[in-house]
Image (cartoon, rainbow, N blue to C red; front, side, top):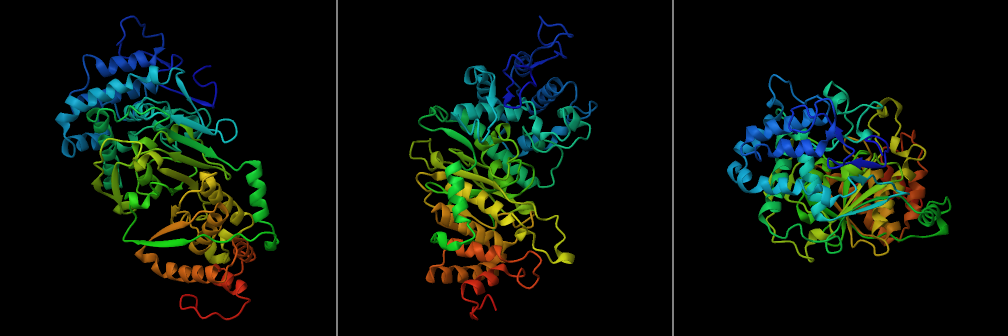
Length: 517
């Protein structure tokens, strides 16, 4: 296997196949013209003459790593080698206990980073594939090792994250477009647009490092006692047939009853554990096709950024296909962030006791599911509702069902969700919520739907719809059939698909409902 031989694995820094030039002559036995194992250079950078003891020294080491790993291309200008790390540097100096970090915490993190050859003896991790390699199981110690290396920016960027065939990270340094991020360098430089959100992510990360160093036994659970599991799920053939029967044009073929739909009002989005689906449910993450963290305040960026153990998903997950979802279990959230976008901000840090088998985080389940990107359609001049274009309802239903049914054979006690795909992606709130409720019925799970005050009018309409559907014992197949009968360009009925479905299933009788008149 060469360094770039297969797309099915990601080479780790400890792989003997990952070689680089010793540009700083740190290894006495090396010649500047002969590549040597990168891990040997990395160890020398981080320990010669000793571990970093102040912020400037850590910044210089990160810069040396970038230059070495990325073939001489640094993320910052050579005339100001640490300028690109300003935000990280200011965070350490002004927000964190810098002295304690370098004295007690950072040496423990380095020690863990150097365990990589023992923790990953093959020198690589396998990329998830829903058919060939759908599930990867890690110990918490393995995950922590990967997170430390993401902080050090030592893991080569996966090929699927770079726009442009055969391009490396040096391509991005010259202005190429990144489709995702393998490391945390996007949190380090300058003043980010969503600075409060990034400050919260760094707080979660450094709280994680603090736990690694200061809480004995925190990472000692084996894969049986506390696994971190990442599963790329698509429907199996028998499940596909079952869903096909549910989607049959004749709704009389089966009648699937709805499960409860509970609406929960929140002042603003929050990662408080009450909204994460713990301990026996699951929480939907409104994902992009390329799952992972970022430097903004979207729901996905907040969900992953507040959970360092979830960050390695970017190393094993290609962009999601239409029939795929990512399921992540056993990852611990460390901080609470409230708000969205520019308003996203840190509100508290979890100070839990040492982990036990009874910890709610051991069974925490994150359901990463991407919605269709509908914001590019011209809906104003055409009058078309893109949610209802051919195949779109079925695609979203299958996506949600694949996620909601992933607890099988024991269904989740509940699934927490909200207005999935209705923000930047441009989805219609009525259509998306009907689809999710139907998918939950087919999966046999209740929904807990969180919403903010500015959507109270929509929720009032939908709650009345739910009450009538439950009272009249409508089936999920009937609601879907009615929804899919609306033509995308039917300007009269696509203004409120909810009202149209109501009229259809009420025998087109006039129903007096305050929210639908």
